[in-house]
Length: 207
Image (cartoon, rainbow, N blue to C red; front, side):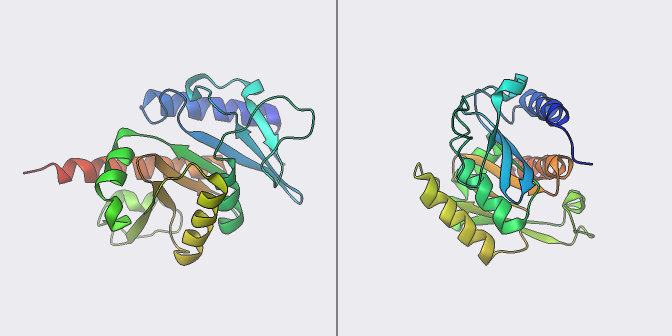
């Protein structure tokens, strides 16, 4: 049975409150989406410029494959809706979550010229779907940010085609994108990556 809009709104609110409390979606940063239907493709996505710490049902919008809500519906979806759609199409994801933490911002800037970072040897890697050993090496790509969303979505799609095994990516100076089969799996991936990013950042600060 597919979850109802009421159930999804409650899940979005819970995730938003949790991530806000951890400092991962402060201000109006971050955006969340979940697939409602695939044929035709419809997403439930957070509206633009809202606090994720107290998401209200009216701040969740259904958009189609063009990234727009139905004609006559009020509200403006996240400016990054095109990126969510690119991930859903490339990965057949059921949910996409974007956070904007201090560590993801710092590392994406510090390592931006390297176009990514390797995460290896950490037990927490086993929290990523399909990973069975801490010896796994996860490549977390870094993409240059861009205010031209269609162009950026195209680069995201190309990146996911080039690296079919990745579980997420960083937008430089902007934050983490990750996904899952559903909101619970995507939320777990956020927690894993944010832990690994903070751990990596702190280790790089060691003398």
